[in-house]
Image (cartoon, rainbow, N blue to C red; front, side, top):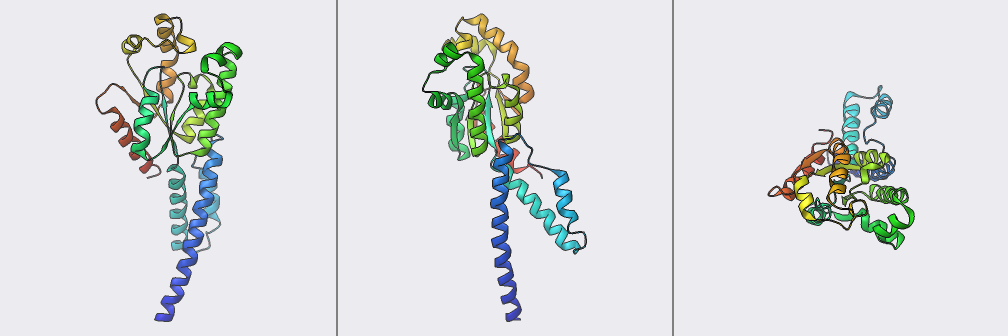
Length: 245
């Protein structure tokens, strides 16, 4: 019996090493998928893998099904949390609150762009126009998608570039901070290129972008709601845990 148990221990050690190696490769695949707007789950690929083992025992096939499931969950564990919404909806502020709650780092796309270009957002808009700014913004999103495990505070117009929507939805969960228009107007925000002309610009931008925010979001919340940060954190943890349940 002891000799047989020793053999089992040796096999288990090999299985553990191979499993860790498989999860490491799964993490590499996850990075590849996140920055190419590819979904984690690929049913056709899964079917092809399992088909290889049709002649094996039912128990082995069941084990492989479980391994594939754990691989998908491992990939889902590294998804980003993206905060979207109008200027002054609290994306950066909530990002700073949520990052420690979720034990993740914070990435702010506007700050990343300024670091990349050594220019302010206004200077980029004034010198190169909105189109160039959106290209920088997309490049920064590709970077944070590749990294994973982040809370990402996005710029207010991030969803105006269509490729960004797919990129964020496949590399993370999207939360829309839906602050009321009245409070956005009362905030008196003027330090954004597209709303420097005042309240009418804010109203126009809100009406233009609202449907995009709402349709892209996995979760919507009023940031002025009591305990909003804790609600978002709990929702995100649950959403990740329940992925592929």
